[in-house]
Image (cartoon, rainbow, N blue to C red; front, side):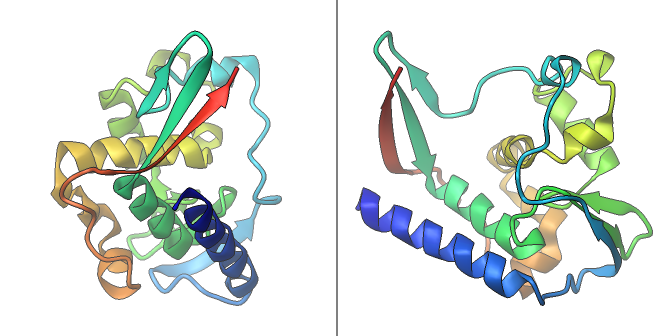
Amino acid sequence: MGINLKNVVVSAAVGAVVSGLLTTNLNAITATATYGSTAKPATSSTTSSTVMGTIPNTASTTASTTLVYTNLDAWLDHLAEKESNNRERIKVLDVNGRYSYGCLQFQMATFKAYSTRYGLVDATTVTSWEELLYSCSLQKKVAKHMILEKNSNWRHWGYTVLRKGVGLPPLEEKVIEQVAIAQ
C-alpha cells in the first residue's frame, strides 16, 4: 500500500504542476506574481528560530524516526493542490480585498492568530510574517491544528472545499502510512 500511495501522490503532484500552469484561482479577483519556484524559501537563523515545536504525528527513538501520514494529511495535501497547485510562493488578492499567501492561501490575520494560538510561532521573535507565511509545511501544521480543534474550521477554505471537489475533512484522523527513517 505504501508504494502505491506514493505513486498516487507523485502522479497527483506532477499532474497539478502540469495542469496548474493554465488554471486560475476562481476565489480571487486578481493574482499577483508567483514568487520564484515551488522550492522552499531559504530561511535565516532568525526566521527558523520563530517556528516552535516538532512536526505533528512524529515519534522519535534512538535509532530512527517514524513519520506518520494520516487521512487528514492527505486531505490537506489535496486542499493545497486545489488552493494553489501546491505552490508556496504565491500571493493572491482575494475577493475581500486582502491578500492570501502560500499553498493554503492563508490571510495574514488568520495565520498570525492560529499559528501563535497553537504555539507554532513565537510572535515576539518574528522578523517577517510574510516570509514565514510562505512556508507550506507550517501552513499545513496550522491548518491541521485548526481542523483537529474544530472540524468546522474547514470553512476558512469554504469555496475550495465545496466547489472545487476537495470535500469535507475527515471527522476522525486515521493513519494511512508509517515510514521509519534511520538517523
